[in-house]
Every structure is written in structure tokens, then in C-alpha cells.
Image (tube, rainbow, N blue to C red; front, side, top):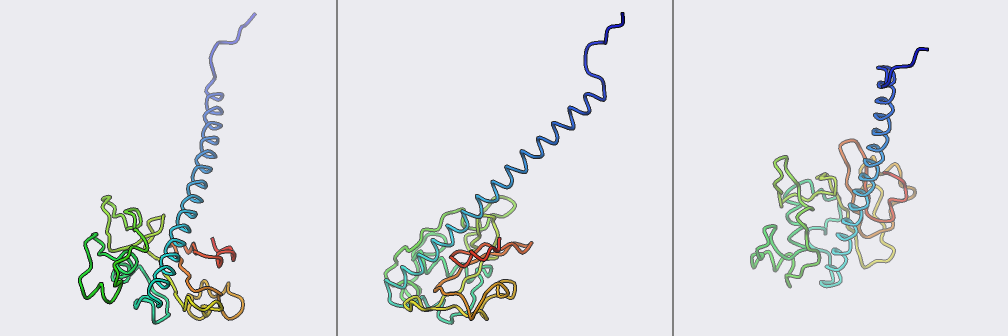
Length: 203
């Protein structure tokens, strides 16, 4: 009577290996999806904190920061804009040192910290260093923009024409009822938007 030799055949080993690879792929995909969702949520919180800081600034000084008074889209990808944004809302330079007398008078007379910028909010270069003149979202994406209107008018509407074309096409009516909208756009066109405007499902 012939007895089957112990152990696995090559075919059986290959089948087991393929199954293990499929399972590993599914687990990694789930982890990746979860991580992406966490970063989206973190970015929205970051942008909502910026909105709250801008509104607090307006309540404190009774006006918008001079940086926003043109009521046009401002790109924080521009390091000068990003640096100015930090100075206005933190009341200090990006290196943590006090503003000059002239800058303090113009940007934040009381030197109040309406937002304390964390290290992770600044661009991380490939070598791991942070550039504190460039703000980023949780994906380390520099392409952040904002539009600020009159925060004291309950009926404030940010005109549809002020948004980029890829967002404008989703807006129904004349614009978005909000005083502040902050959003980022990744290289692949994915949008993350700060306020109730994100119910348009742009993610």
C-alpha cells in the first residue's frame, strides 16, 4: 500500500503563498484607506482652527487683518503669504521671535496668539527638516488657499467667481454662504475643504 509522502507539494506551497499575498494586500489596503481618512479629518480640523483664529482676530480688532482686505483668493503656497498668515494669527515671527514694532502695529497690535502653529503644520522637506515659512495640510501638501469675506455680516456670501474653476462647477447659485473658506488641493486634484461647503462631496 502506497503512502503519500509527508509535506507540501510545490503547487500547494504556491497556492498558500498566493492566498497569503492576497490577504496581506487586503490588510494593507484597509490600513491605507484608514490612514487617508485620518489625514483628511486632521486637515479639516486644522482648517477649522484657522477659520476660528481669523474670526477671533476680527472680534478682537473689529476688522479683518490687512492681509485679507482685498477679499480675493489667497494662496498660502506662496511662502510670503504663508509667513504673513503665521505672523497675523500667532502674533510672532515664524521662528517664534517677536514681531518688529512696525509689523506688530500693522498686523497684530496686541501680539495675541489666535492660533499656535504646531511644527507639523509646516512643510517637511525630503531630508526631514521643516520650512517654517510654508504651511501645509496633514498630507504635507503646500497647495492651500483661502477666501475671507466680511465676518460681521450674517448674510455674507463668497461669490462663486472667486473660486477656482474646478470648485466653481459644484456651486449652485451665486456663491457659498460663509465668511471664510479654506481648502487644499493635491496634485491629483483631490480637494479638502474646511467648512460646510464640503457637503458637496469633493473628496
